[in-house]
Image (cartoon, rainbow, N blue to C red; front, side):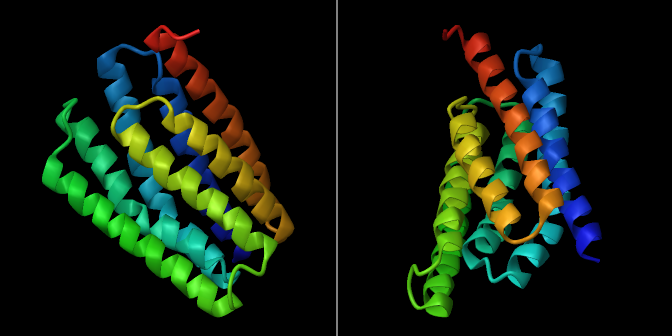
Length: 193
């Protein structure tokens, strides 16, 4: 069952990064379709990630995955609406839900471990910062979200290897390659050198 969960969560996550990376530098209509698919496939992989992370007492990372669903839905909504100005009430509700989940996950981790006492918790904090800030920035069409995804992928890969989840560790490293591609394409597309 563990390998099935790793393949399910890791596969959908990797597809998300592939679609997002290949969306960069494309014509707007093509970019929009690829982003819609990218947001959707990630949401489909969330249940597997949450199950795996909860089973390892990775409360911070599990809360990020579950709490990040509204941010992913926000990104999907923005791409679907094809607007540069995000819906302000939806933006507020997304932020509120995400930060509440974050607070609960960090709080429970501190309770469960009696503080920040584990290296895995530090890695989870890297995942948390990378995921929340990266997803939020990309939902607002800010290319610097890719940099935070690099932090997230590096932290999660290390965490998965330490917790004997090699399939997910490798998937995170492959995802990192697509994140690097997406970032360079986004910078090239925006005229940055």
